[in-house]
Length: 162
Image 1 (cartoon, rainbow, N blue to C red):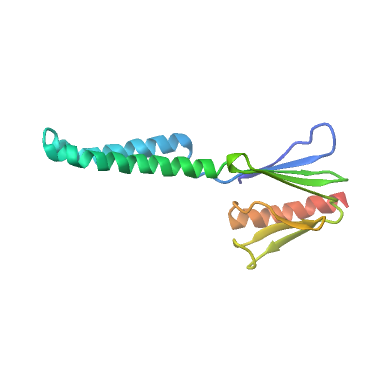
Image 2: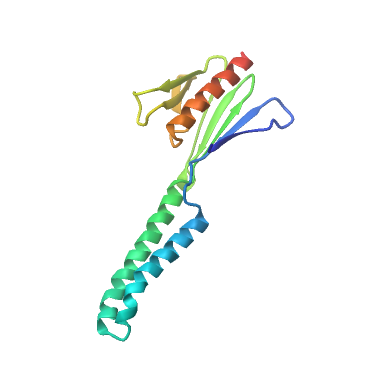
């Protein structure tokens, strides 16, 4: 699962880290780009020494560069980390978004409500926390089954604090 509860450090604060699932690690991306370049170059072997090769080559290099750029952009946009801290007196959520954007939310855990919206949300099984006059999303980048499991786990941990 792309989230984990960290062991408590000294005090009784529980910490949860959430991050987007990456099906293609960076090393796999390099292999993918290399394989794509090799497969594109394979039919060009017959054109070596021909002026047609020089006419086609810039477009093929542009295609490989565009794939590289798109994957790099996807990795940059996916640099999201959500950090949830849960103690007896406060629950706080800090979202470290792409491009250095940070958002935070705090509330009293005794008044926080965990809601799993089955259909009314931008994604299936949309998980939100409501408290302190605000409703914030949690793990919108997670798959639906992970959000459902997280909702159950979070409800248990909040119930244990109350």
